[in-house]
Image: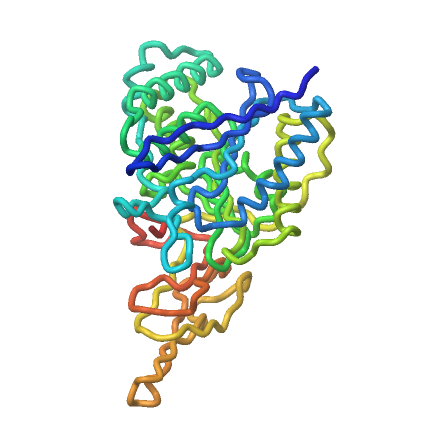
Amino acid sequence: MLPTKLIEEIEIPSASLGNNRKLKVIRYGKKNSGKKAYIQAGLHADEPPGFVLMHYLIKLLDEADKAQKITGEIVLVPVANPIGISQWQDGRVQGRFEFFNGINFNRNYPELTERVATLVKKKLGKDPTKNIRLIRNAQLSCLEKDRPIVDEGDFLKNTLLSMSVDADVVIDLHCDYEANLHIYTGTPLWPDAADLTAQMGARVTLLARNSGGEPFDEACSKIWWELAEILPEHPIPPACLAATIELRGITDVSHQYGKSDAANLFTFLKRRGYVRGKAPKLPRLLKDATPLEGVEQLKAKSAGVVIFRKEIGDVVKKGDIIADIVNPMAEDPAGRITYVRCQHGGLLFTKIVDRYAKPNRVIAKIAGKAPIKGKGKHLLTF
């Protein structure tokens, strides 16, 4: 049997004269094999750890493919945002927001729930497998109908979603500024997703039914529990395990991390039945998942330079001083330092990397066990 690896290039509509970009897609296994996994890196194009992971994951999958061990369909998009990766300013890649409109590349994905419900409600039955197939076909039909032919940012989002909405597993690789490895996923997907958390060694897993802002992973997964609520008379399981993996911080780029993270993701795929072979024993779950509503975003109250008193991974208590904000221009010596205290306990899992503060800037985040009142609908930072 020949290797199954196929490489596809998808041309993105030109946004300016003489400017054409292409999206590279790597496919393994057989289409319609009954199991599909989709993995992408660099949707926020200025977050480099995912690219290194992809380098090593491609090597592992190439070897498995040559040994005829690919048993499901696996789709990789090693560089998911060729628009953002080309946006350089002041010597740095600015790949989080699209220059043309200022929109976050990982927000504003289309909400298809109501349209899909209208298309499938008279066709659904008592067989959950058939219901899954009907819903996926309806999603693909809506996306095909809506495919932009001009706007490159919308075309990119539509294309990425069209390749992923029919997958059983969707992994979106990101990183934070300075952080522990942590994972975002849907509340209805826990504890089914616990093997991903354990295998990746994440100390923080954040759960939400709807985090606000329509990020990519929820565009793939949220529709399933929303349809189950709208059409309760039909069995509709949460058929897409979608997760965003934050691969530590923006400077945590090394062969060691890339190789070990790729090996863990490969083992996860093997354990899930996409690659033939016996997976090693599942590592111990380091921490149970906590609600995204329980994340305290520590905000600066003044301008200055941030000196952190606590380190990533520290468990903190209510009232602890997390950081000092130093303003050398204050006339009163007592006013040169402003203390930033946490109002809730938990695990400090991310903080800014540049150490500059301005009023209301989020400088760190703490994962708590209980929801915090008054969090509102938008639980993610933009």
